[in-house]
Image (cartoon, rainbow, N blue to C red):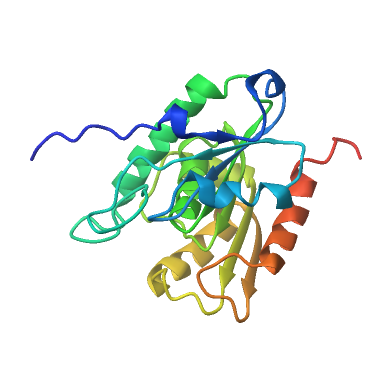
Length: 221
């Protein structure tokens, strides 16, 4: 086959909640949007999130096939749909971005919706020693095994997983795998929201804010 260029994150497309001079030494929370969306989507939630972390919203590196809109982290259609290898390639691109643009952060964590939720968990698996926690909104854990999985089984980092009871976008097999995998590899805060489809609600945001407040509470308080 043809050699594909590894995906890269465009630093010029990143939306930041703070200017460069106000980022050093603060925790960083990276937002990862869903399929066919863009960096502005989740950045609009910033007003609902705690003020302790610097927030950076990334633009996914791929464009869905025409006539699709926006950007994607990996293909969901065709022979290579939901390929864990493609997920890993994009997660490695995010880590490479962090190596260059987030070296002075006190900690780094990932919050993603749908595809971005799968990404946040994949990032945790690829770099368990670097990622403080992950938030998976309406997403799933990819299949396969990664070297970091053994570390996660031992360290159990915090993960928040929210999903709507009426969500029909994520395949049931992926939900079942995630429901089995997350409790064994994380300190899981999970909730199913009755009446919610593939979306984020005010109820989800309230629970998310509580989860994040615990993560960013001053030590010893």
